[in-house]
Structures are given as structure tokens and as C-alpha cells.
Image 1 (cartoon, rainbow, N blue to C red):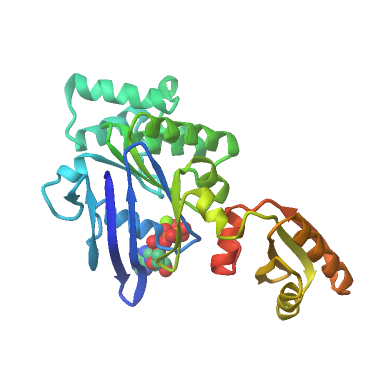
Image 2 (cartoon, rainbow, N blue to C red):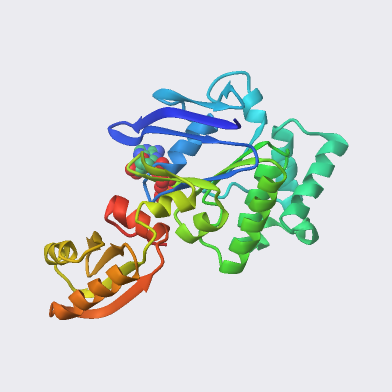
Length: 309
Ligand SMILES: Nc1ncnc2c1ncn2[C@@H]1O[C@H](COP(=O)(O)OP(=O)(O)OP(=O)(O)O)[C@@H](O)[C@H]1O
Ligand SMILES: [Mg+2]
């Protein structure tokens, strides 16, 4: 196992940030930690990377304790922080040299590592440009390269695509996939559901410092059933809709949030029964959509809330 996280807990004063989180990440796998703002993703990464000592529980990197210890665990992991950690006045290559040296690289080995990691993220031709001339997307790519410079076996990526355009995001996702393909273990946090569905082989949905559900995307989807999900928008009344769902065979109420509500239908028949009941109910609906179940519906079911981008 590349990473074993066992029942870790952490509180900032009275704020409980991580409340008994456990999961494993295997070599060659991208494991996602998916959760809204404040769910405890960064705190979990900080514990795994040894920056914060857990109040209880442990994180083992290839069998070695992450916090304290000999530093051997640390040498095998690369961390890409949510807040970009780059020197604006230095060039891309100089930034990578800085990180490479911290990981004990020097001489020709360091220069090779810098070149290789710039290549990986497609920045070889901008190696000598100062970071302050980079766009947000380029900075995110360089931030990723800084975590890869020492060719770590375990990558901890904390929202590596936040705030960038779709093209830059695809580029980063490709690099992450390639890293996993070459056998590295990746822990990937995100609050973008589509991203997690695209690249994670398994994932855990977390909220308020707890894992609400974990498994493959297919396993998680099964939590809301294989059938379609119906979402309505309009002037809705949660209790009324719950009662309406209870009267429709094969339909379960998922959630109501503001002016939207969702239902899971067992199969297309159950779905059309629900749609008829909705139109027959006299409710004023502005919109009705039928969708395949996805992680968004899983999240809705587990938390009663939407996970917004
Ligand atoms: N340095 C800190 N001091 C006090 N409270 C903190 C600190 N860092 C995080 N918290 C709180 O701990 C909880 C978990 O925060 P954390 O940053 O781990 O969540 P997150 O899932 O990474 O959120 P985001 O998506 O916003 O990055 C939140 O309630 C947050 O307000
Ligand atoms: Mg965070």
C-alpha cells in the first residue's frame, strides 16, 4: 500500500476539521477526496504530508509514519499545495531547482530533474521566464511540476486545477493520469465532481471531516440506484414532494435545496410515473430534467446539498 490513512482526527481549537477519516491508496491508482469547502480535504493532506500531527490515528506512507519519523516517508512523496507555492521573481527553472535541492538533488541530477519535470507539464519552452509573467493556468502547471521534481512515488495533489480554464485543466489531468500510469499513487482532492468521475479509480466523499461514502464511481452511483435522476426547479415544497415521491412506485426522494429538488427513479417506468405525478400535482415548475445518475446525485443524497463549482 502506498498510503494508509487510519482513523485520523484533527481540530483547530474547537473546530473539528477531520473527524475519523480512513482510506488507502495503492500504487498506480488515483484516489479522490471529494468534498465542498471546509470539508477537511486540506487538513487531511497536511496530516498525510506530515505538516500537521494527527490528534489520533495515523497516516502511513509505504509503511512509514508520516509525521515525525526519519524523513524517509517525506522523500517518497510530492506535495502540490492548494495555494500556489512559487517565487514570482524567479524563473520556472529556478523555482524547480529550489524545490529539487530541498529534496536533496544536486548537480547534473538536479538539472535533469528540472528539465524532465518542465517537460512533463509542457513548460520546457518557458523555463527561463519569470513566474510573474505566467498566467494562472501556467502557474498551476508549474506548481504541479514542483511536486514532481524529485520523481516521488506518492503524489498528494490538493485541488491542482482550481480556478483555471478548461483547457489548462485538461492538461493537468493528463499529467496526473500519466503519473498514475507510470505506477505512482495519487491522492487527489477536488470539489469538481466531473473531474473526480473522469480520473479517479476510487474516491471518498467527505463532508464535515467525515467520509460519507467511498468506493469506485460505479459503486457510489449505485447508492442512488442505476435508474435516472429527476431534478425539478420551481416554487417547491420539500414535504409535499417527499409525500408525492412516496406515492410513486420505484421512486425515492433525494433532496430539496432552495428552489430545486431531486428524485431517484428505479427505471424508466418509475421515472415517467414520477413525471406524470409532478405535472398532475399542480406544482409550478420552471424546469424538469431527467439525468443519468452521477456523483452529483450521490452527493445530493448523502448531504442534501449541491456540490457547486
Ligand atoms: N488554520 C486554521 N485555523 C482554524 N480553522 C481552520 C484552519 N484551517 C482550516 N480550518 C477549518 O477546518 C475545517 C476544514 O478545513 P480544510 O481547509 O481542511 O477544508 P477543505 O476541504 O480543504 O476546504 P476548501 O475546499 O475550502 O479548501 C474548516 O471548518 C476550516 O474553516
Ligand atoms: Mg482545501
